[in-house]
Image (cartoon, rainbow, N blue to C red; front, side):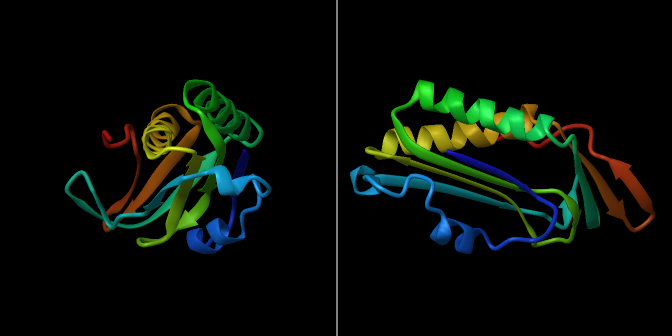
Length: 144
C-alpha cells in the first residue's frame, strides 16, 4: 500500500510501471484496476483555464492511508496505490492515480471505484478554479 501527494506534475503510467509496493508475490494478482483523473477545462457550465489544488499536509496523507487500509478490510486486495497532485494545474494535467491489485477483477474494480469516491467526497483537498472573469472555490465535487 502506498500513498503520495505531489506538488509537481507526474506521469501516471510511469508511476504505475515503476511501482514496486507489492513487488514480490504480484504474480498472485490476477487483476489490476486503474483510474486516472485529469483536470477538465470546464465545470458548472464555465470554461476553466487553470486550478489551484490545496491540501492540509499530513492530514491529507493520513486520510488517504486510512481509506486504503479500510479498502483492504472490505475487499481481498494484494496492494493499492494512490498518487494525488496538489498545486497549480492546467487542463489535461493528471490529478489522481488510483490502482488496486487483487486476485479477482470484482474486488479490484469495486475497491478502485470505492477508493476514488471516498477520496473525492472526504479527503481534505480544496480547489480554486481560474475562470475568464476571475476565480472561484469549488463547493462540491461531481458525483461518481
